[in-house]
Length: 234
Image (cartoon, rainbow, N blue to C red):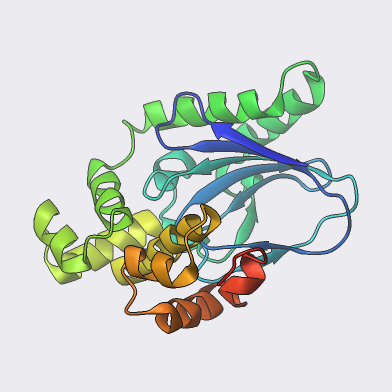
């Protein structure tokens, strides 16, 4: 069981919930995002920005609730640079201390209130206290997600290549070229899931050809596109 919806109070964020049906690991693709997670088994966690797919292992019946923060927003919520969380799963208490303990206690005590609503509330409060996300990060991520080149995105926000790389490490966890590559893969897979043949999805997403897309997906996701899209006719 899996479902998701737009988060309340955090533009571009997504709330998702799922219950593990079995013990088989789930492949989590990189997306440039940071997640605030709650597991019925493991408690509160932070998932950092991944460079390649991660295999998430759950026990049957384990419940997961997550708040997926769009690229560039996570550092303002969690209070640490994104590169410190890169490719990591960290207990929230390591970052927030007592505040994480209080949130965990509230989740345990207030059974009638959805966990998702609690995660949204605390994220909105921390984002407000931080003065909101870095607007430069939001602009960079939006341009790269739309298919702009790194050079074009840098020129639009008025940063040189080195300054853009430093800012991207802080906001996204890796440089702009890596983020652009991940977002391009996500665009292509979304197009394929919507019914586009892989060759067409590759062209529309900005790949040289289908073979280029296949190489990128294998490197970033660990499997071929057809493994991720088993019903795709291509």
